[in-house]
Length: 288
Image (cartoon, rainbow, N blue to C red; front, side, top):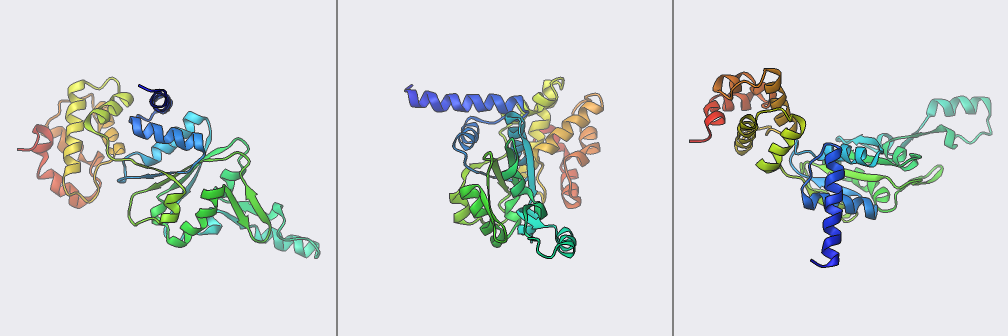
């Protein structure tokens, strides 16, 4: 092993350990990419299916860095006023009525929104731009200056630059393609469903007293659910909900009765529920 390989392997091990202590079990390549995003001060774009743990990774990274999370939840129509900044129009009007020569675009009338809050955070923050694929291309364009320079231009006032460069995580469920301009400004990782070994390790991390046969049965059943054409596949949160339901009921045997009674912890759509109820036996014994 040469020195360069040892260096990136050490980086991966360091970040696997830091994220594990914060409650997130990352594989080696993902840990290396997270570490590089922090070391290089580059935004990190996480893509993958809904429920695969992208948002939780950002929250765990904030705990590992001992930083505050500033979250921007994207939606169709999100704009500069809700993401970057706004003006306190009422305060501006009151001030102008009292002093006609006052500058209404003074800093005291500026209302920071998530991106500006992250830039001006005195100790540095982790900015989570969640589900950026739900926004439109116009909003992506608004993000480009921030992603490239860690600054925001306020036309009426000036430029806001980072006091301490925020660690920036963008997540996408791939509901629409993102622009090449946005992708070029970010490091990238695809966060897929964990393999059965890692998913079992995640269950053991959160429920260390769960009997091993139940862990194996639950993880296999969740994998079966994800292989079916369901509207809403089970995410990691559902896996853990099912495990916690088992613990709450005293870890009963993994039977058709138990699985059928607790499907509501893991199946969240009526059409899916009918599909799964007709195949509960496969969740218990495995596919024929």
